[in-house]
Amino acid sequence: MMHVLAPAVRTATDSGATAWLLVACALVFLMAPGLALFYGGMVRSKSVLNMMMMTFGAASVVLVVWVLFGYSEAFGDDVGAGLLGNPFQFAGLGQFLSPSADAGSAYPVILFAIFQGLFAVVTGALVSGAIADRARFTSWLLFVGAWVALVYAPVAHWVFDVSAGRHVGGWLVNQVHLVDFAGGTAVEICSGASALALALVLGTRIGFGKEPMRPHNLTYVMLGAGLLWFGWYGFNAGSALAADHRAAVVLVTTTLAGATGVIGWLAVERLRDGHFTSFGAASGMVAGLVAITPSCGSLSPVGALVVGVVAGAVCSWAVGLKYRFGYDDSLDVVGVHLVGGIVGTLAIGVLATHLAPTGVSGLLDAGGARQLGRQAIGVGVVMVYAFVVSAVLGLLIERTIGFRIHRDHEAGGIDLALHAETAYDLQGSMGGRASSHGLLGNLHHPREEQP
Image (cartoon, rainbow, N blue to C red; front, side, top):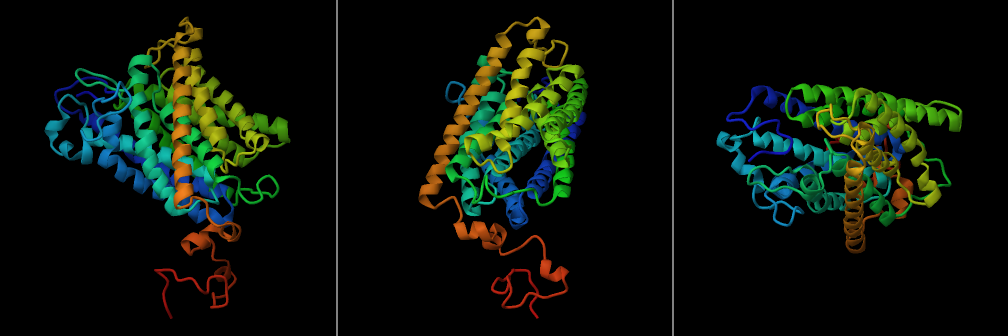
């Protein structure tokens, strides 16, 4: 069968397409440690290891679930009016070990499966930013495993699984004709809505709105942002699934939107606060990249510039909504990913040009309002579904094994309480040695050398 976004049906795999997809996989995987650094720098020093562990833990759990049945849910033959792929059709991915499974595909199907699995990894890890400083690690792993099966995989089926031949795919892409090149709905809106649900379930951090909770290491934030931008080329241009003209156009629009995202955010920051910040520059870059993710294959270079600057400005304003409405989205997943994803997805209905790879026309390209309506349906459906199911999962975990850590552990530091580690050895840096009476005296690290 032919898979989503495949450029053409072929009788043998194409070495160029395969090589590009291999590179794209590596780039998307790099986004996970990039996100760990980005998020890790944004939290307080007592939480940095836990924040990074939530990303690496998500990567491990999501990939296991994805191989066992997540890929089948997303890209298996439809079993419910475009709502879900057959979860058992490709369970374990064992049928893709033989080259004969690649017939009709330009690349090995098993490679495509893992490429899509890495999308799920990044999406799941994004959600963790909303509950920084206050979630049990075991509960988070349980949540993200269930979430990828019940939220992400079905949405990916709706958005990414194109019908071809005898294969029946998802309803949003095939019946509504939603355009989402690399995941504005399935990745950005899905993660943002899920993050909002969890933030509401867990409640606010101790001292939220009263105490300063500034990023503890802006160098980490800037380094993580740079790795994310680099990895985003695999995310967006890799979704062309071939090293061709489409990938080139997408790479250009991705680059331009990231650049103007910085400008849009900093402009608002300068007018509102009177100064430019490195934190704002990193956040604006991410906002621009979020918005271009669904629209990278539909816009002209000028359109990409516009989407980036609008997303940077709007997201810079939107991150303040949590103080107005009282929800504690710790690292602004809602303000950047949900809002940025909405901006980019709807922008297709306005700025899309028929000359771009997807060939869609928006309002300004004499396409009328039809495509804008399709995009709005996709935004609304994914946002509501992800929010509701994530809230139910979060409440179920909270009321059974508990999701939020004890208040004393939260106040004292989640790294020490949950992982028996601290990110910075302050005693060692002062020439001292932790004693049995010190902060770490009663904790044993499994790799600690004994005297």
